[in-house]
Image (cartoon, rainbow, N blue to C red; front, top):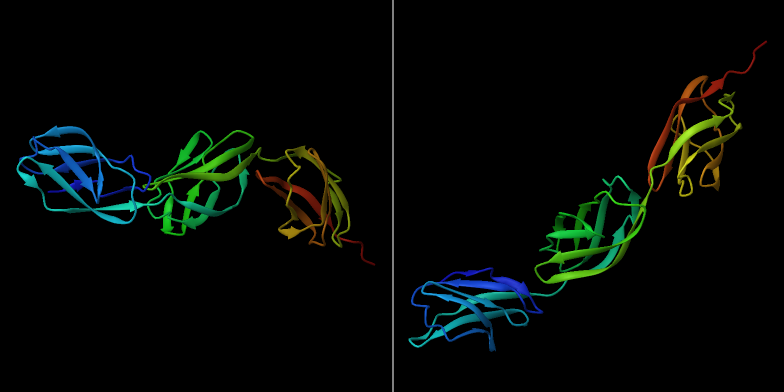
Length: 246
């Protein structure tokens, strides 16, 4: 006599179907010592709403002909979340987000506000998920498992940064040139590189970042600005000029 599903939330409410024979006269279904709510009966199946419970319990079906053999049913507690990383990313989505906690083994979906994604279960204590696209601002994050849904974290969507101009566009290979980067969504800038070399920088406002070009080799290099919303590249945006020789 199969039971499907054989696990559900400790808070109850799981719809469970038990199949077998001679079930038309079912009068009661017990989950351990607790009665389930019967919602459908046929000669070969009984559908019930599981009561609340904990751990593993035996499920039995009672008819005028007696009580069936027991079947195991496993109660699973609601997930508990401990941390989420990173806590924000681009409105375009695509960021790999790691959620740590307990009771995550049966995670089936992660909602970022109104948008959901299917997670990859690493262990009972960790899942990873690719953030879906979203609108600028913070949204709540909730994890749904067989044991229920838990929320309490937030994720902030940022517009992707852009770079429109760099001034000046050249400087000595010895470095030290103060370069003004103008664009959009620059408030959360976390790094600026010239040809892959990190440069000191300061955020002036959401449209302006000031950086100091590090030493480099003569020639044009890409300038890359990284922010919470992603990266913006000025291809060949700055040229190092070799010093004079005598």
